[in-house]
Image 1 (tube, rainbow, N blue to C red):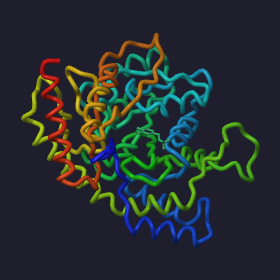
Image 2 (image 1 turned 90 degrees about the horizontal axis):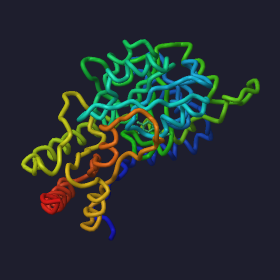
Image 3 (image 1 turned 30 degrees about the vertical axis):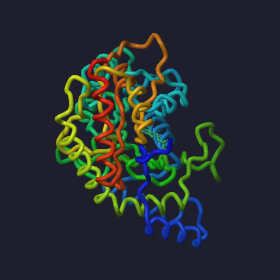
Image 4 (image 1 turned 120 degrees about the vertical axis):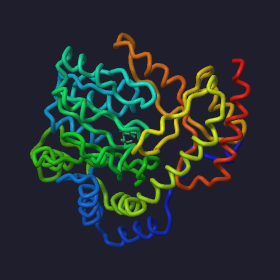
Length: 355
Ligand SMILES: *Cc1c(COP(=O)(O)O)cnc(C)c1O
């Protein structure tokens, strides 16, 4: 059936539409004034010296790894529960992604497990993700010795423990894919204090008028995307506040639900509410998605397992893939829509009590 409440809905208005029209009329397509303005806005927001825009989040990770010197035969630590883009970025250099166990509740990299795998694989880099907006232990992980890439696709525009998201490690990356926290259709960025890293990414994103080199693809950001992302950056504080208010409402209204059937996400002071991921204790997330779908509610299994057999055991990640379900959470979700989600979710959960 058609969804009464979709899992995702984009947030945009006249500001985004006008921005795109202005960009088209400017006659500039690739890396013009909008990209430049976006780069200074992003750098200012994270409090870092350089931001370099690229064509996607995957491109941002790939070029950040390249800037850190990752090449064929190297190992890159990634969270066992993460977007396959991270693994693909490592593979693109001929490096091997090493999935490492995550922590229960925050679903971010386990710093202790990281330590032993960095040592045993002599990893060249670690990618830490603020999964669903919960802060990863970037500082602790950075102290383990390998350079860290802070993936801020799910968390940007505020600070945690006095440090803005994106300023916690040598380099940070962003994705502006349509359904991310900041949606620009497509796009990504690399943030860093290092002139060397920024220079590598800048020189790598565009093959035009440059020497032949296998790592130079077409990773430019275009002006339309930059115009959209700039408009989104202006409404970011309101978008974050709307997400937080809805998340608090979910927590309040679902907290009386059966602790035997599901576990709510942790409040986590300072976190960002990109996704509201609930852990199902008796049924799979897939079953919940299909049961809610029949009631007209869009839910999703938020991350798909990409790992191959034979890798280090990661039972918490295994359970996260199978049992985390994402409920609708976006700035344009109305309270009435959210009430419909809550009552449908509590209804299906009653059926799971004896599952
Ligand atoms: C989506 C995503 C990416 C990849 O970004 P694209 O712009 O889709 O290439 C990387 N990391 C995380 C955490 C993501 O959610």
